[in-house]
Length: 256
View (spheres, rainbow, N blue to C red):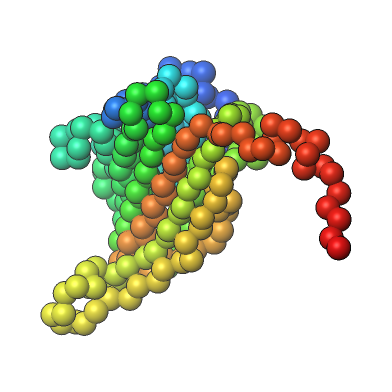
């Protein structure tokens, strides 16, 4: 299993962005989101072959495309169920599958993951938009599952991956992470035996620019579901007075 995880990390660093890939697009008002998974070329990973990991997100607002990288551990999910619309809204995409190394069928496993991407555009020409990634990772095993948390919209450190261009834009966001449930129960609203399940909520991460949540360790207890929600908002950057006239703000301030 460790070897498979290591190979997945190598695959995640490969410059495959130029290859023909399986992608879906949904839109709303002035915005669209295109989610791409790996092409069906990676074999040798068991019942869920071919391996098709989440690769990238392209968020287009008023004709400008913003590159966004998906979150982790969602990046270790072999996406087989992949569509827009149907049981989600027309401006949403749904993806689901087993975690690498835990597959039992093409769509099931002892650890499974699912994500819904939602795009909510503003009025045409406004330059505003909202993108949301909601991920669930279900640990169906009988042991703790150690994962590494990385928020959607992070800045890649691999030289093979291009850095998203935010020039002229104000990008802000939040990420919330929690786990809920155990081997016998998930809901904290159900009072019936055997009692309420556990819940842990991490501090909310609020940011401007790139998501600072990167490679942070987290443990999902047996039977629990890890939920990770990231919201990104974009608008055009409005130059401040100091940006327009830097000489004014460079003057020393004399306090009497």
